[in-house]
Length: 411
Image 1 (cartoon, helix red, strand yellow):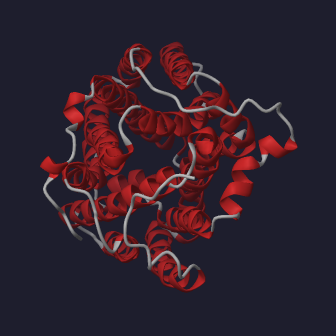
Image 2 (tube, rainbow, N blue to C red):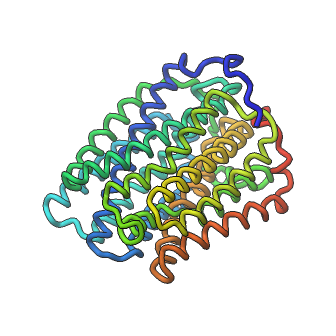
């Protein structure tokens, strides 16, 4: 990894709109993570069924897949700030429903799933829309660093959100949900203040051709297809988040505070790496670095799966997050610098379906396998599977390991 001095490029701190965007992304992701801790502990305490933890991910997976064509059109045709702001408001209303339902005693298993479906729908629109904002805020020459800095927002939130959520849960789930409601509203205000410079937009009438344009563009570019499918299968197999309540309570013998630490651990490693990449770009051998990071990602899951100790589990999850952050920054940089602005929303919607849905579907896979065979085999099989996928993709997409630089001229 070649890391030249950051001083040779403009400073991200001089971009007020990027600072607002960073704050909005940090706050909304932190609130979602707080809510996830509360929902995970509440529903597992309510039913004691590992499969329900998988269904939590599944109900948030469906909107990403079903609405992917619509999401891309919305991101490319409408003000992306407005779209992101509406998503925050919807998530705030969903969190408020969780609070009222818990306080009123009517929040059962099915009601939680229904509310999470609404949250998942909002996040389905939010994900690709927030990603497409970044290239409209900063110059392209520092886009990889901006993507890494954006990842620090995500990881900072994933560190602080679960820890805060676990502590607030000691006061009851209602406290967590009300806090999330307020934070989502604050994120809506922050994103509305971002100023962007848009390139040309697609003004063609909506048709089957425009609806499927993102898929067609990816199919015609093997590098993009390889990147997105690599992430799809790696995360599908490597997701262990749904298993953390089981590990915390049944294997590691800890409580909500321990669950918060486990959920935060991947973000500690990811944040460390993301901060470094936000100051120093990867200049050479990007493809080799990406595949190495995916392999380490899989091996760290194997260690976590077999660990009987909380400290070792935290260390394994920290490496898990650090290796994933490297591959995420590389993949997102390659996708965003190789896609024209007028097509970016639709391509990122497909990217979101591949990456976002693989995470939620991966949670369902983990929960279902844990219900059938136990949590340890579920995690172990996933970790070995990730390493196999990395080796297979190097042969299936030989262009990927040959990639040297992250930034390419847009067509």
